[in-house]
Length: 232
Image (cartoon, rainbow, N blue to C red; front, side):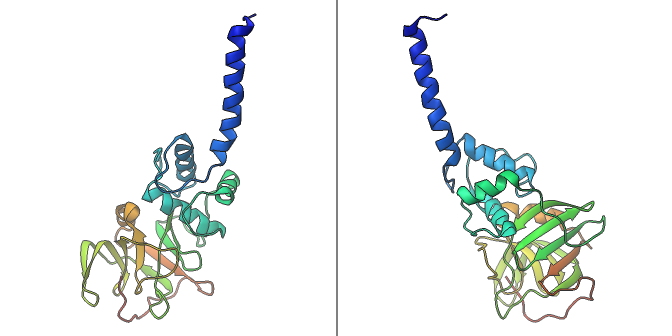
């Protein structure tokens, strides 16, 4: 058996670590944080499809903030992009979101009520992404559409702004990157995608990919809707 003068420091260090570990696990995580607990958070979000597969960064950057917000939107939590006690508790028992529509093909569901886009392939939700659809007076048209035009840098004539990584699915309405994607509907009709995920959505939304814009009262499968001067 080890002498007491050697054993005592070991026992003391072990007690300190035991006390610190729960505190570290319970700390609220937000933008700018770093550490093993942030890496664990990112791995969990990746496993559930809120971050790309294999995301294992130890930094809490913009991608993590938007991923946390998407998770909060899906589960009806406060949409602040901060991993606090409620969010972290829900993460422990959460499962990957399920599609609202059926079929094995590639498609995207835009859920107005939750303000998320589900990227679906093979009947499984591959990614859940926080988005912002049309604000009051500029409602993103509900219904079933197909991607018909794609531009890496698209010019919006009515609003005189560039729309990076644009995939149009009806009239002037597109998925596109935007520097600020709030938790609520805020666009002029388009579906704003956070910059960290815009290229991924652009690649997924290949030509003729089906897009379902779903409101609480939407019936899927209708014809394309006529639209007004929608924009970013």
